[in-house]
Length: 192
Image (cartoon, rainbow, N blue to C red; front, top):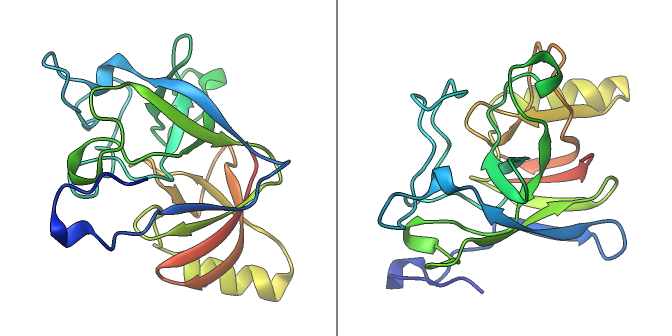
C-alpha cells in the first residue's frame, strides 16, 4: 500500500505490476544499503559523484521509483544499479532484480525501516508504468525488433532504470521487452 503524504498523490499508480509471477518470480527480502541513508536516517539518493557511478540515480518525487534495477551489495543489502559493465570486469555489480517499493520522497513506503523487496525470477512478466523505465529509443527498437522477430534486450541504465542500449558491450541483460504499449507502459520478461 502506498503511503501518500499529500492529497495530490492520492491517484498515484504502482509503477511495477506482476503479470506472470505467481510461480516464476519472488519478492526477495533485502535491506536498503547503508549508503542510501543519511546520518539522520533520511533517504539519500545515489549521486553521480558517488564512487562507481557516472550518473545520479533517477528519482521521482524525491525518491526511488518501484521498478528501479537493483544490484546486490554486501550481505543482503541492495544498491541502485549503475548501468556499468558487470563486476567480472571490475566496473560494477550485477543486476539482481527490480525494486518492489517506493523508497524515500513523497511516496515512501519504508518510513524508518530499511527492509525492501526486490522482484527477481527469470521468465516472469511485469508491467512497468512510466517513470519506472527510460523510454529513450524504445519505440524504434521495438519496431525494428518486431519486424525482425528478435527480442529487445533491456539493461540497467546509468540512472538505474531499464533502458535499451545501442551498444551494450558486455552489459548484463536484465529483461526483454515483450510489448511497448505506449510511452507510459511496457511489458517485460525479467531475465534476472
